[in-house]
Amino acid sequence: MSINKKIIFVLIAVLLISVIYYYNFMDNNQKQQFFDFNINTSQADLEQLEIDSIFKISGGKGEFILDEEARLKQYTRLYFEFDEKNQATYDQLMNNDEKTVVIYPIFTASAYNQPGFYNYYSGQCDDNCLTVPIKLILRAEIGGNGAQILKLLNYKFLSDIDVDKNPDILKKFDKVILLHNEYVTQKEFDAITSHPKVIYLYPNALYAKIEVNYDQKTISLIRGHGYPDKTINNGFDWKYDNTHPYEYDIECDNWNFYDIPNGKMLNCYPDKLIYENSTLLKKLKDF
Image 1 (cartoon, rainbow, N blue to C red):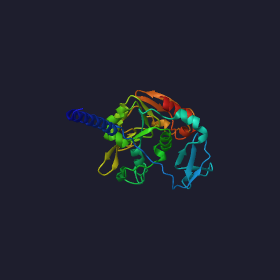
Image 2 (cartoon, rainbow, N blue to C red; image 1 turned 180 degrees about the vertical axis):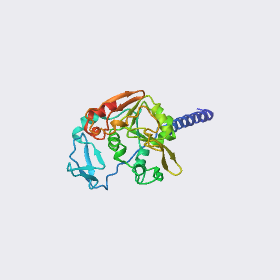
Image 3 (tube, rainbow, N blue to C red; image 1 turned 135 degrees about the vertical axis):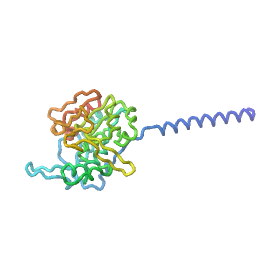
Image 4 (cartoon, rainbow, N blue to C red; image 1 turned 90 degrees about the vertical axis):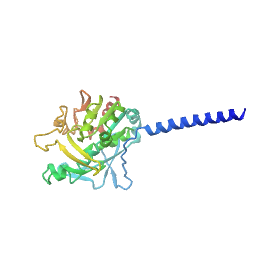
């Protein structure tokens, strides 16, 4: 082979390698970055609880409210892990659909911090409490049980912030699952309600309008939940708001999903149901 042909061959090889590297680089950089929340219990003092469930459940020692009438400890936060004897059930429930995503309600978690929105609602402070820092806290009030269980079952997450900053991100997914996303921005509300297949797993979603100051890392209540006028319930005047009466049905004895134009809504608050009943999780996967 002549020197010129060798040079041409080497140049072609280098060009091919460069093209392959470029497309691999672009592909890796275009992969969706998902939201992750860590559940670190390594330093927590946990005790395993005897609760009817398809999962093992623990509670933090001392993290409970004593119901003296029922003589029961109501744990403020539960922790979930797989139970080996139920592996066959998990195999049926495990999510393997990359086109399904759950929206983690970080704005709602922030609203429930204290002092915050609920101190204002109860008259303990003025409207200064309606601006609060954004904090990633796994709270029971945001559907924390559901978030942990769906993470165990291999569901991917985006946060409220992801959707607010880039509403078109939801167009990448065929199915969107909401937890207790009570407080959302207008852009997030529009992105969710315009998506063709949303599973509203918790009642009281999309209830109040907030705005975000990303420089200050805060959210502020704008409208809804009796603000700025006590006659205002849903901050978006959303006709499909299912807060009343479903948010307060925590037993879910007659649970069912019903249809609305852009998806399905559950008719009870499933924070217990989601760890007791594999049928709910199977329906969620199969929708």
